[in-house]
Image (cartoon, rainbow, N blue to C red; front, side):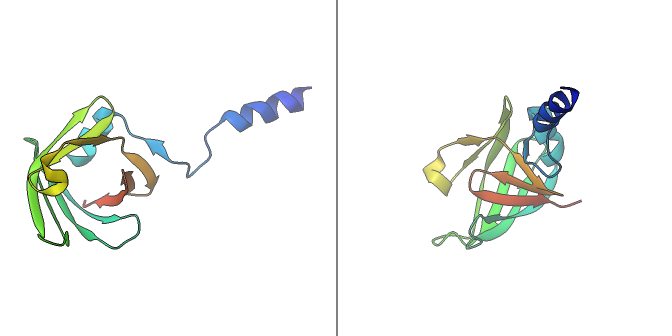
Length: 116
């Protein structure tokens, strides 16, 4: 009986390397005043990000008609929100930030890392 209870408890424990969503405070600490690199999940579009401490943001990449955009970023609960001037026609989008590896994160359909 004891073996089955232990096996059941171990099944509930997080597995090393399993993805985890960051809290709002963790997202803010990770991004505020930092720069990083990103790419779409399929690797077709790549670029850089800068997240200002004041909520101002800049992104570069090959977006087709343009190669850079500026906007704002903020935390809403446990989600990262970004609103760009050109991307998504200026509509804000909020997503959780998921840890997928050492200094590797997923937001929506993009993967990114933060520069030290």
